[in-house]
Image (cartoon, rainbow, N blue to C red):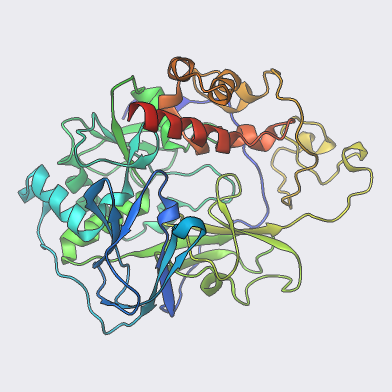
Amino acid sequence: MSEVIKLRKGLNIKLKGSAEKVLETLPVPATVALKPTDFPGLTPKLSVKADNEVKAGDALFYDKYHPEVVFTSPVGGKVVSINRGERRKILEIVIETNENAGSVEFKKTDPNSLSGDEIKEQLLKSGLWPFIKRRPYGIVASPDDKPLAIFISTFDTAPLAPDYNFVLDGQMDTFQTGINALKKLTDGNVYLGVNENSAFTSVKNVGINQFSGPHPAGNVGIQIHHTKPINKGEVVWTVNVQDVLFIGRLFESGKVDFSRIIAFAGSEVEKPKYYKTILGAPVESAIKGKLKKADYKQRIISGNVLTGTRVKQQTFLGFYDSMVTVIPEGDDYEFLGWATPGANKFSASKTFLTSLFPKKEYEMNANMHGGDRAFVLSGQYEKFVPMDILPVYLLKAILVNDIDKMEQLGIYEVIEEDFALCEYACTSKIKVQDILRTGINTMIKELG
C-alpha cells in the first residue's frame, strides 16, 4: 500500500446521535419508489403505465438520450402511481410490493469469465448501470465512455455517516465479485480510498490509496484530486461502496437484490442504529415510532446534514443515500444569538468557547443564523476545500457564466459534496451547492 496522504484542510462536525453498531432488518415496505429527480441531467421516458405488473429488475423508465440506460424496479409488484410535478415532470414511480411477483432472471456467472462488453450489457439490462457515475459532472456514466480508472471511497467522513467496515461485515466476498466486474470496464485500475484500520485493504484486483484528515477526506472527488487529477477531456468513474454489492449480487445470483443497510442517526432519534431495508423504501418505515419527540419540529434528511435532501416521512429514500438523519428544525427565537458565550454551540470559525473542547459532540439544528449577505473574498472557503482550487473565484465565474474561467478554475474536478462545507461555514449564506450545479449544467449543455 502507498504512503498515507494526509489532508489538513477541512472540518469534522461533531454531532450527537451517531448510529450504534447494531443491525435490525425492517419488514418489506408496502410501497417503494424510484425518483428520476435523483439523477441530475436525466430526461426520463417511461417504460410502464399505472396498474402495470412488474418483476424486480423490470424497466420502469430510461434515459431519453441513452435509451440503453434503464432504471429498474427494486421489487416485484404493481405500479400504483406515477406522480408528476410542474409541466408534467415525472417525480416518482411508486410500486406496491408483492413478494410473490418474482424477479427477472439474468446471467449467473463469474465476471472473470466475461468480457467487458458482456458485463456492460448485463449491468445495463439489470438497471445497475445508473450506480456508476462519471467525473466530471457527477452524473450517470455514459456506456460509450472508456474511463481512465474507477474510484471507490470505502469510508465516509460526513457528520454521522455510516461505518462501511460494519456495513460490509460478512459481505466482502460479494464486494470482491463486484470489483472483479468493474475491473473489466476500464483499461486502467480500480482504486479504493481507505482510512486507518480499514477492512478493505485485503481486497484484490485494486489499487489502494490511504487517506487521513478531516471531512471531506472521505469524498471520492478529493481522493481523485490527490491521486489522479482529471484533465479536460478525461473521464473517470465512481461507485459507492454498497452499490458495488448490488453488482456482486447480480453476478452471484443472477437476480437483482437492492437491499441496502442505512444508518438512522441524529440527535432527535431515540436509539440511533443501522437498518436493513430496500432501495426506494419510504422514510417512514425507518423512523416511525423511533423519534424522541413525536410532536416536535424536526428536520428529516435523506442523506447527511451537509448534502442530503429535506424530506417528509412519506417521502421515499434517495437512490444513492445510505443514511437518514433527524435533527431539530431550529425555527424558534434565540435570545441574543451569537452574542452569547456559546457554551453548547459549535462554530466552524472557533467563535465560541466550545472550540477549546474539540472532541465534544453537539446537538445542532437547521437554523441559518442570518440571511443573504454580500459575496466577498474572505479566504474562508479555502480552509474547507483540500484541493488546489480557488472556490470563490470558481463560483463567481459560474455566476457570470464564464465557461473559459470555469474550466481554468477546476470545475471538472468538483461536485456539490466537495463544496458542502463551504456552504455550511459561509458567513454570506450563499447557496454554494446550487451555484455549482448550475455551473455543471452549463458545462454539460455547452460542451457535453
